[in-house]
Amino acid sequence: MLKTFQQKKASAIPFAYRYLLSVPPDYESEKTKKYWPLLLFLHGAGESHGPIEKVLKHGPPKLVHAYSSSKQDNRSMNDVNMECARLVAENFITCSPQVDRGYGWNSTVLSALLDELEQTYRVDTNKIYVTGISM
Image (cartoon, rainbow, N blue to C red; front, side, top):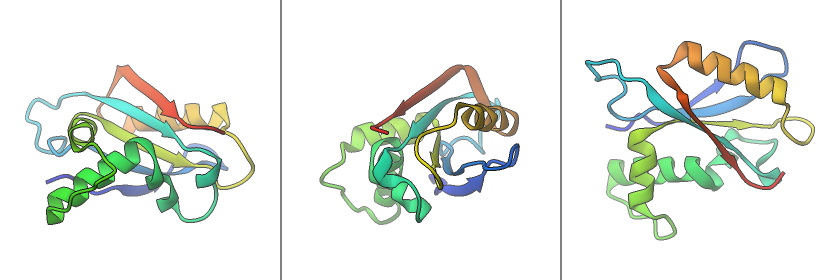
């Protein structure tokens, strides 16, 4: 079963970002302790501040959420390509931080977040991908 998003806050530095994190369904059951690709999604200006769930509106977090919802109650998301959602949810660790003050992303804070994720999760450091929208 797909693990639902975990809400976290990077602890390495002050002013760290809150973020949603998902791991593939097989992450915990892997006997080989496989290292997984990481997909970091940087939201747009419309998802800054407020409830962390705002980041579920677009991109990889939307896909993982749709996939998880469809597995839990057989719901279909008409505006989501479910094959793409399955691909992301089953094959990537996803991290979706949220800017909660100011505007724009801070590269120092993002670097600290990546370091923390690499130390905490089995991230394949040769397969770290960053994507996002606007801002």
